[in-house]
Amino acid sequence: MDYYKFKIDESKMEEIRDFYNAELIESSKRPYDVFDITTYDKVHIACYRSKNQYTIVFSGEKDAVKSEVEIFFKNAIKITQSENAINGEWEDNSFQIGSDEVGIGDFFLGFYICSCYLDNQDIQFIDSLGVKDSKKLSDSKIEEIAPILLKRIKKHAICISPTKLDEYKAKNFSTHVILAKAHNFCHEELIKKYKLSSDIPIYIDQFEMENNYIKYANPRLKNPLIFKTKGESFYPSIATSSCLARYFFLEDWKKMNEHFNMEIPKGASSEVDKTYKALVKKYGQQEVDPYVKHFFRNYKLDS
Image (cartoon, rainbow, N blue to C red; front, side, top):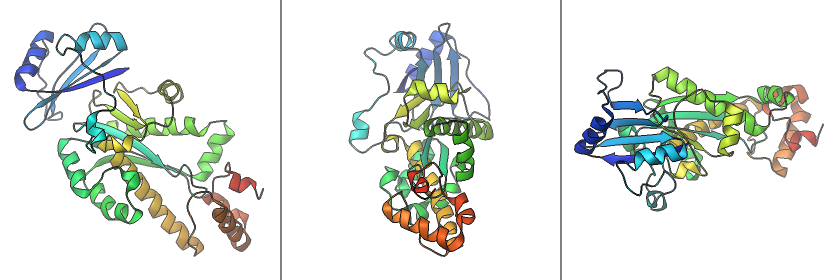
């Protein structure tokens, strides 16, 4: 699916609405929505309002959506990397959903996945907190700003414990299959919880090719899906999701350290191997097992 988004003024909005004879959306439950329609060739067109402008979104199959867009915008370019991202600005500053995951490369603890919804004011809010390219934020900075984000941002997060990961691995689910299903679940729960529109784009920090993601997750949502490598640098919803997922991970890490009365190193290095063996020796395999990923080579070294 291809995706196009344009900032437009009121006269352009009315031109497009008149062309499709689209009815205005007048619902208190959808205060930012202006209109949305689906053409005969299954192109979704949705318009949103912000303070002083409108945003219009076209999404659909490659040729169909391009033809529809070019009725109003000549030489349009579908959403990819833009100069905004290169210059340190967000690729998209309007209504959006994003998701990201952490804990994938750590032997201890599980996978943490979070999905967030942001509107224009939310994006200004996260900018004021310094949520930019969250992979570069220190853990101390995340622990400072995440509690503030949690009070305002619409989100849904899950943790897949090492025990649950074992169950999925026993069913021959690869890590990519597990992640695809987890991201999709977070999107669905977020949209259901907050009654969000089906035309809001979903940005995903890309860990798999789009066609494989669709095959693994089998999403029922109609929302446009946009995949981006290092997406936290381009889309504020991914950056916020990354920040919150990391925060939940760090909170559980602190609890684990307290439980074992030891500072456990992150990652999967030889230092982690030494710590793991020391814990097993001190507490026993049964006590340590629920905290580690059994499919990592660190575990197999001692199996």
